[in-house]
Image (cartoon, rainbow, N blue to C red; front, side, top):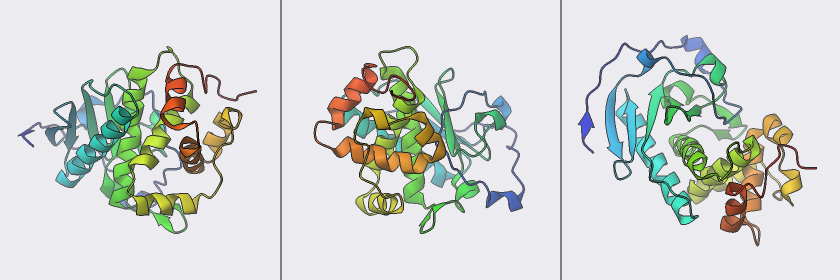
Length: 244
């Protein structure tokens, strides 16, 4: 992949002692702007040059491209348009107002995703027996890329948080290798949501990782899958945060 060099001041790193506590309990969109001078490293273009990835660490750049490619393949297979250009930037920390416990965030106004570098979150444990590794991290990139392309595919101006998170969650689980997916599902057991009425913001906020597991199980149920995603994108399903 051709690289274009870009320089900028080095991002401020969090104290070493804080790294182990950067537990990311939410996968969330963020609404704050990232300081322009916090982006640095080389830029690579991938996924048919639609996605540009900027990172100090070439391993992060590779994971960014791989996660983006996974997400694009999954979304296109489910009928979404995933052709708009976008950027993924790897940083040492996200803006405080963007969700200090998040792994990454998508800024719609910038068409840009910010991801915490793997080095800064590799000590994270999602649950006992389910620790961060590069396979799961790659799926977290896919989660954020799904937010980006979902935003361009919604037929409604203001889709709900649960609509966004459902789509990003099924993309994340759907792009995991089978072994990793089974580890995630075993860590967050359940039978999947039985209906739209169970897919609410409270569940997501209390346990976003469990929400992801239950959303994926729901996606696999008869009559769901691509058909349900189309209803979500059309605003016909998950149109309220807490269904009646």
